[in-house]
Image (cartoon, rainbow, N blue to C red; front, side, top):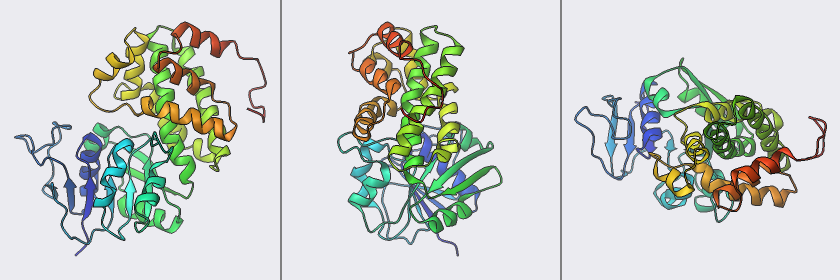
Length: 324
């Protein structure tokens, strides 16, 4: 009998992942702080998608030999559940962001808190509702050991959810974190009526900014041109299901940071990630003008008109200059 999978976190993303894993034919234990479900048998954050019979919702963690654990907990809360991870079982971290105080990526948190647990990270252009519905999608699983990444992609891929293996953990994690900040900026562009041209230019230059930083931190430019970089960036900067994009829309329409956050159904990781990225860029000696402007704008240190002027008045240069 095949081993079951454990999914930790029963929000929209964790529930969607549990539904996907069940489609591989595996049994799934979906860990939630509260085990209550809707009358339809669906979880509250995805009310339109009843759980299949192979998904068991639980608030306790039994001593079970799992195939792997998929962790769908926001990055800022990740360390709090580290003691609950089963020893020696691969943990696939399915969150995006940077721990604010330590500047640690998800895999860094795992290595710090649970060095006895093999780690991988899942990232890509994926909205929870579409994964739950079984619509076509693709993503990347990166791990320090490429053999582990390949094993997990082989195990979890389906004909409608294509998975690619990678060993570039830095590029994959940075792409997943930084795209949220650029998505806030893209939403501001549209919310403020600056136009589609401005958004397209911002996305493109945002990708260049992310790629520079990734390479400075040891990542690969090719990764940022792939699913965990460009793919995720495009989706998050244009899709109305993106919380970070919707956050930017509200900000561009005149809402304060507090008001915009209150209007969202979940966490907008770009808000907590912007400052961390500014610090990482400064430590690496990399210019990150878009991220710097968004961080200052979110903190009330910069108005929209000043941010626009600051970005558009930068010295002109060749598009692909080797220097920042």
